[in-house]
Image (cartoon, rainbow, N blue to C red; front, side, top):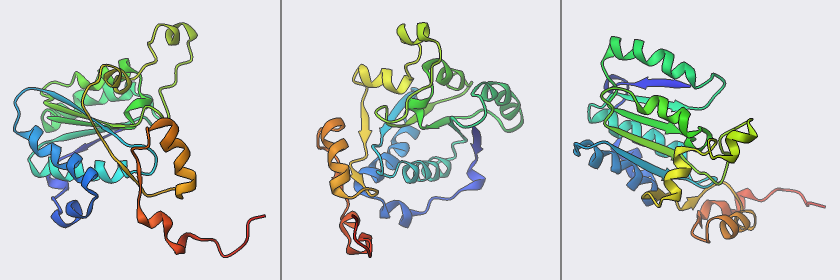
Length: 208
């Protein structure tokens, strides 16, 4: 699924940006630094479950568009990724080239699929958002899987130690639930927000 985001559609809300956790806020302000660098950049934002990846994407879009960057937003949805390649030519000819690209749930796209949109003319930056330890790309061919064709660009960059920013605070799970994935998958580096310990989260009945 694709959507183009132009400066006319969004304005930077400083209050909402400052309301984000520090880890999320730093990911969003990264867009400002990217705006003033000439060479193309690929930036990874890794978000374990419940850490607010969607909020970060929203904030990124606000910052990027206020810097007069036309942005293409992609994610794997019901329509095949090849539709991206079929539609971008029309969009670029009508509105001008895209200068930035945001791919949400990037680990769900095989590397070849991501390559389609990263070839857009005029593209100056790309931000890949997701977590390779959650849902990964779907590959039906065992042969393709065996030779690594099912690996996502996000995962490949992680393997070669490409710099990434990690969202470290989770807001979804009770600590007794989050402790297992935190320990086994994320090296105990994810913190629980105080809201998940709130008494309001307790059920008014006994579990049997």
